[in-house]
Amino acid sequence: MIPTFSDPLSQKLWDGYFNRVKRIMRRTPYNIREEMLHELQGHLAESISESRAQREPDCVQEAIERLGDPEDYLKPMITERLLDHASGNYSLRSVILAFIYSFSSGLSRFIISLILSLGYITAFTLGLTGIANIFIPDKAGLFISPNEFPSLGIINNPSLYGTDILGFWFTPLSIIIAILMYMGLTRLWRRLIRKAS
Image (cartoon, rainbow, N blue to C red):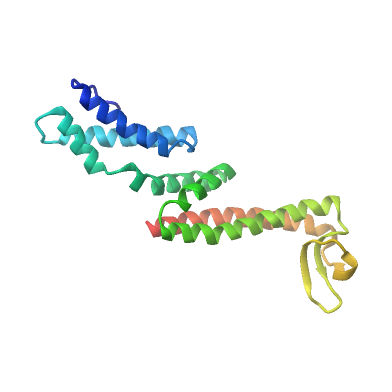
């Protein structure tokens, strides 16, 4: 909802503010970006209508100041919206974009994202190892050496690491565990980010 302004300065203030918003949101998926943009425009338009300033440009400036700098509040909002989207459809793109926004939106969010990124890397690696087991079953799997020490992954010399204890079952188990880890980490991240807010 974009209001109609009679003063060109008011339109310039509005456009300048939303150019900053659009610049911050440029990597956000279109549907999320448009939804958030409409919400912000609605908030700003409502704030302008409630302003007690005499001149229209003063009303717009006052409303912009009340809403705040988009550089300060927008990245955490985008991260949360992306995580909501990702936890609904488990979109890898949304998770990656949430990481990008989260890494630059405060220390607590950065630490949460950093720790969870290790979990995502583990899940991704486990899934890839499961897929590799299809093509190179003698070199990918869960191996137990003669001294009872387990090795998980893709190994170059299987004779040094013992025998694969799961055999064919390694592929489906590792892929299922990787998917469950991905889903669980995405939901956990959303909860932790909301608590950090």
